[in-house]
Structures are given as structure tokens and as C-alpha cells.
Image (tube, rainbow, N blue to C red; front, side, top):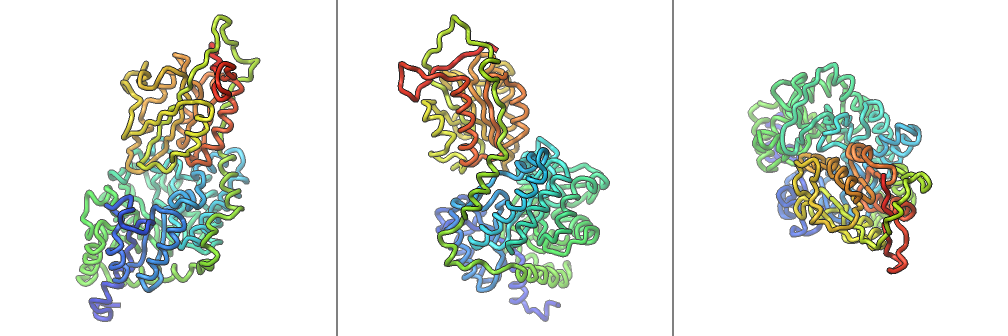
Length: 565
């Protein structure tokens, strides 16, 4: 294939097929949550009509997603790739579908019940694939194959399936089996491994100073497993790994994408970049040059270039000038076409209008929540130090302090979230602390008294922490001094109970500090189902061990039993 055979117009159309652009799952432009990256409907219709070959979606409901996928297929006039980052189920991004616990939940379950974890991981993949297909998606950007062996990782964290390569390989392999059975494409990411980084590639370029031998023994193992299992695509990582390439980030490195991934590991499927709008790439290279460098290095598909038209222009120029051989375009288009042809046709749309989540999938979602819950049971009543005889249990209002990290509006904490409503039913007063709102800190650097208790009221505190690795947050929430805050509250006899949603590392650090009389619980999931299950058990323990009915008040009010530990 050469430029003369294609012609200028045909060349642009062929190059455009390699791009995957970002769109909102909502129907109208004004509903876009991230207009910086989500193209307008006019831009999308133009680009798809000009040959752009893929769309990545975020936001809206599952039924809106169905309509959007149909619209994009109609605008394109040819089969296109429709994908989403639904690593934790379609409901993670699109309301109304199953929002599953993060993969790390099964990694922790694997320690005590490996066969059960593998079975659940396969069902997890099947659930993701079936619901994606019902909604019109044909490509699931999962599983995450990174080994999260660095507790300070700000962006992978609970997205990983474990902390060692064997666990990650076994569980991602099971996920892939379930996903593949549904007929949609999967994606192993982020190659060659983003698990041992302490910085976020959305914000900067992480440096991974490991030897090739170390990479072979740890980071690369899960990718080998998924490649052998026939995964359809591999997503690159924006990392600089001098042992593989001293100059170029992995996404732009022929050493990584061609010599390592293609030649050494034998991968034959699609290679897709991580989003090129991420600062690890965008801060260093223009939209056109980044696309050319990635394509020349061995990427087939260009995900979210900062400027789609500039990327197409630059790729065409590189092909016409001979900077990139025309055979590269031919190979990538053939791989893309083979992937599209491997997709099983969507289920009959008439069957999907009102059935996004089946009863079986709902049962799976709840089972995953229950299996991943961890309870630090308080000492039973006769083991507790009894209340001081001189102290009287007085009616007191418990403060339900919720610390939530993430963007607004916060999907894990709608107005009817169980984290708010269940404590409210017991008469607790809720206070929500968010990075853009009320700060709970007086002086975070003060190890003895970091919390500004005068802002929080006088009662005992039920502390609920929503903390996990989130893109663009630079591990802000994990750096907050909750260890010292817990010590401060315990010292004042004001810590009533603790709930941690998300990071197992925060949970392990804080739960180790608790006296046996303080109930505490952990869930890797942060969604309402996880809150409901955790709080039902935690509040029951609170009522049994730390509360007694106040006869002078309404039935929903309690008096606190103060224990001397």
C-alpha cells in the first residue's frame, strides 16, 4: 500500500480510523461533565463522518448510553469501536447498570479463598461484558494488569487485582475468560506495568527505575498471562523506564511497543495508547507529534489526542513523507478490522431497552460486596472495661463525619446515600467534608491535635472515610494525617466508630490503632451498595456495644456508653 494507491482523501479517512475520541454519555452538549475533553455533538458528527473509528464514553445513564452508541454508529456509517473505562462494572460510569466492587477486593479474597475469588472474577468479567454489550459498547477497557505492590500508588490502588504477579495473573485471566465469553473486546492495561509508581501519569511522567530482570519477574507476568489467553488489546502506560528506553516514555517507545510487546511477548492484537491528553504526554509533545511518535513506536490506535484534526494531519504528513512506513498503516488497519470482525453482534436492542442488569447480575454485585467486607469486631460486652460507676450515660448527639475525596458531583455520595441516611435514622448529625468544602483540619502538621474539633461539634464521632487512588488527585487524601486524627479522637474518648471505603492501606494503618471497644469496618467498594452492607453491620455493633436507648428521648435517640480503655 502506498500514498498513490490511497489518494489524499482516502488516506485521511484511513488514518482517521485509528483515532478514538472522547464523548459524553449524555445526549446534549450542556450536560457534558468534562467539556475540556468531551467533544461537542457537532464535532463528533463531523469527525465520525470523516472516518474516525472509535469513541470512548463517560457519564449519563445506561439507557442514555444505548442511545448514544446508536447515534454514533449512525453518524459513522460504518462499524466503529465503542468503549469505556468500566473496570468496576458498567455502573461505575453509567447509572443503572451494575457497579461492582473494585478488583482489589477479589485480590484480598484470593488470600483466604483463592478458588472462590477466581470464580467470582470470571463472573465479574462476564457481567461487565454482557452489560456493555446491552448498552451498545463493544470494547471494555479492562482488566487492569498492573501489580499494585506500592501502597503509595496514587492512581492504580484498588483498580488492581492484587499486590503480587501470581494473584493478578490468575484473577485477570479469569476476568478475561468471562469477558471473552460475551463476545466483546477486552484490554490489558497499563503496559508494561503502572503498579509500582508513586506519581500519577495524569499529572506528570512517572519514572520506574527497575531492571529488566525485575520487570520480567513482576510487572510483565500478568501481561504474559493475558496475551496467552488471547486478550484483544493492550493499552500502553505513560511511564519512563530507563531499563527499556532511556529517552522515550513507554507509549512512544519502539523498544517497548514493538521489540518487547510484539517481538518478545508475541502479542498480535491491537495496541492502544492511554489517553494522550494526560499531562505525562501532553505537557511534553504537541497533539500531532504525540500521535506520530506513538504510531511510529508501534501503537495501532490513538486514544484521546488533544486535537483530533491535528493528529490526523500529522499522521498523514508522516506517512506521505516516509517518516512512518505506509505498511504500518496497513498493519494497524488490518488489526483493527480483525478486532471488529471478532465482536459478536449485540443482543436484539428490543430486549435491552428495559433490561440492563439481570437478577443474576444483581445477585453477583451484592455477593461481591458481602465477600469483600472486613469487620473489626469489638470485644464482647463481658470483655469490655465497664463504664465508670460515677459516669452517667447522657443523651448525646453523635456526629457522622464523612470525608469524601473525588470530583463534584460525587457519584459515591448522592443525597440519599446510605452513609448519610442510615446514621440519620439513629439521630446522628451528618457533616460532609470535601477538598472543595469544609476542612476538618486545624493544623495537619500538629501530630497531637490535627483535627479542628471546634468546627465539628461536641459529640462523639462516627468517622466515615472515602479514600482511594483517584486520577488527578496526586494522593492528596492518602496524605491527610488520619493516623494522628484517630489518636487524637481516641485520646479524647470521642471516636465512636470507624468506616473506611476504598484503600486497604488506609484501613490497615488506622484499624491497627483502635482499642477493642471501638467497632470498625472496611469495604474496598465506595458505592451505595457497599455503604449499605457495611453500615448495617457496623451500626448494629454500635447499638449493641456503644449505645443504649435513651428513655427520655425519641426511640431513635441513644445515649453513649463511655468505656475507659
